[in-house]
Length: 401
Image (tube, rainbow, N blue to C red; front, top):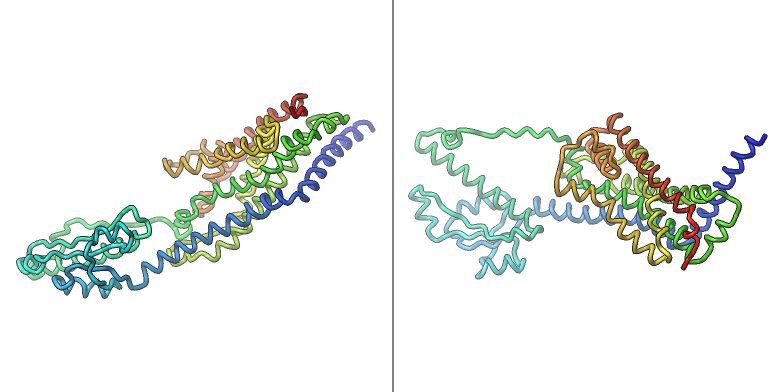
């Protein structure tokens, strides 16, 4: 009889704390806005909106007629007829093309030297200048388009000169490169969604952050922790209830974010880029499973850091600094791309990042990789939970001054 009553009392104490914290924070407008609206919904919308605008602009520049200022058009009429056929239209000449490019009045300017006709008739090499600013990212598509058309024209004319001399065009190019790209349409989607793992981690972090602050530093500042600890309930039960509440908000935030990305992903024109995105149910479930131990780890770390703060504002400062930690794997992998190794999946945050990238590519996550990912993060979560539970045993946690 006692053996049945004991566990039920333990469970009742845990559930009481858990339900109390969840119910109270559901009434908090700031927590709801951050955990369930701003992070998981606004971030995907802004991300996809910005990406959609950027892609649409680049596609327009690649497909629509492009007007380029030209200096010396009269010296190379055949060249500019070829450019017109490729959608590049000669525009009015500019007095100072270098200044115009620096001021972003033009993406690229073509300049043909006056000696172009004489050199061409002699069969000599001629030069066409492209004046541009490589630091202007918005101009890269126009520069590449003009440069590619001029190079194609040069190859065609070179081949015709060889034929006129009774030589095969292959004489000038004895070696040709045959490129065999093995990337699938889905794998190429990683190029534009490479930051998705970081978004998911930040969503989990933001989903539980204000709850973690309020349940530790907030209650400490309101002096409500001391009467809570005075109840005849084990401290670890109180901590377990609070931790479960934080994890619930973090998991809910991640789930909303996954649903949001699966919906807004359909509005991206990735098919025009030869890419494919699969952000459906299978993707969402895989990410959710990989993130489970990470949710507990982040919640424990947030509770631990917030426990050292004596006020709500101080805890916000501490956790804002802690927010930099989830960004490290994404930043490091962008700065130093590495070939994933099995052991890397056991590193918290890094393992989740690599796993999400694998699923995005369409390769999937193997059983070994999933076990490493879950095991490494679960071990780190257990350590963080144990350390934070020890802090809850300290009487200083209840003291606000």
